[in-house]
Image (cartoon, rainbow, N blue to C red; front, side, top):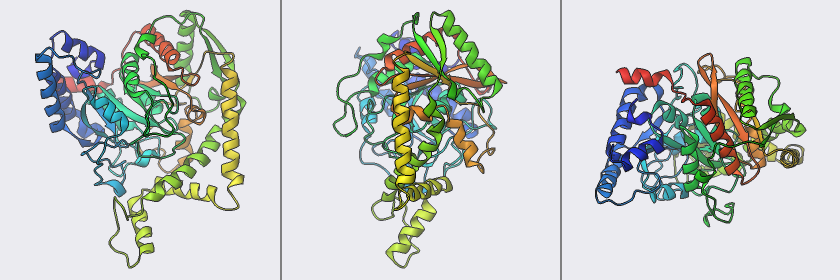
Length: 491
C-alpha cells in the first residue's frame, strides 16, 4: 500500500514518529494523480506547486521540532464551489470559468491555520445541481470502482479523489445529499453537518437554506477530526450557530449498547435494489449484535420530501443565480447590441442545461399566482418533515437508512431522465429539509460496487452519529478499496 492510500490520521502518525516527511506523502499523492487522473478526472484545477511550497515549509517546521496544525499537512482536495484566494473557483460552470476569488471561504481559512495542503479543486455538477457529476461544464468524473459508472454528485470529484488516493481527504457541500450519495457510490465516508454548524461564508450558494459544507474521508476518525476543525460560529455567516462545538474525536468509542435505532419505512421501500437492501440488513444485524436496539418506524411526511425539495431548492437557486448577469464578474457575451440581449446571451451560453432547468422551475414556482400553490405548500411540507423527525427522536437516538437506493449507475444512463436521476437522492433529501446531521459509511459491496448506510441524528448531535458510525466501521473491520488502486500500484 502506498502512502497516499493511508488514512489522514495514519499519515500524521507516521510524520510524528519520523517515519515519513510531509513532502513524501504529498509526492505519493501527486504520483497517484499522474497515474489515474486521466481516467478518473476528479479535478478541475490542480495546485501541485502551491502544495509543494507548503510541504517544504511544514517539513522545515517539523525539523525545528515545532508542532504541526491539526491537518498535519496531509493532502486535501476542495470542491470547486468553495472560494480559494488566488485559485480559480468555477463551480464547474462556464460562467465562472476564469473567476479567481480575492478571499478564502471561512472553512478554507480555518484549514490554512491548521497547516492545510491543498492539491486541487475538484469536479462537481454545475453549481452543485446534480447527482452524478455529469452536469459539469468540464466533463464528467468517473467512479474509481468502475470507470464506466458515475461517482455520484454533486461532490463526485471530491469523493472520487479520496477513493482513488488522489487526495487523502476532501471537502464537499451537501444540499440534498451531495456529500453522502457520492460517498456511498465511491465507498468512502461523507458527513452532512447540522445546518449552521459549519460556516457557509465563501460557499457559492445553490439553495441557501439547505447548503452545508462537510468532510469526505477514508474513515470515520478522519471525518471526526475534520469536523472538529470546520465546526464553530462565524460572524461572517448570518446563519451560523452560536457556541463552540465539542471535540468530535472524543466521541469515537466502540460502545453503542442500549442505543435505540429507528429505520424509517418510507426510506426502505419501492426502488431499493435487492443488493443494497441485503447489505444494509446485514449491517443492521451487526448493530444489534453490538448491543443497539433496531426497530422499524414511520415518518409519514418523508414520502413528500422529494417533491417539496424540487420546489424549494430551485426557487432558492433562481434567486441566488440571478447575480450572474455578465455585469460584475464571470463570463459576459460580447455579441449583444443592448443590455437585455447581453443578459440573455450571457446566461444562455454560460449556464448548462440542468442549471437552466432549475432556474426556470424555481422562477415559475415563485411567480405571481403560483407562489402559494407551489413554494408555500412545499414549505408547509418541510415543517411537517421537521416535526416528524422531532417526534421520531423522542423515541430513537438515531435513524438509519440506505444512503442511496442503488449503487452507482452507468455514465449516461440517466442524463435524459431527470426524474430518475432525482430519485437517487430520495434517502438523503429529507435530512437537508430538516437541517439535521447525517453520515454515510460503506457497509458492503453489491456486485463489486460499494453500498452506503446512513446514520441520521438530531440537531447538533454529531457526536452520537459519529459514535455509531465508528462502532459499525470497526465491527466491519475492512477498508473498501477500488480496483483502480491495485492497478495504480502495479504501474
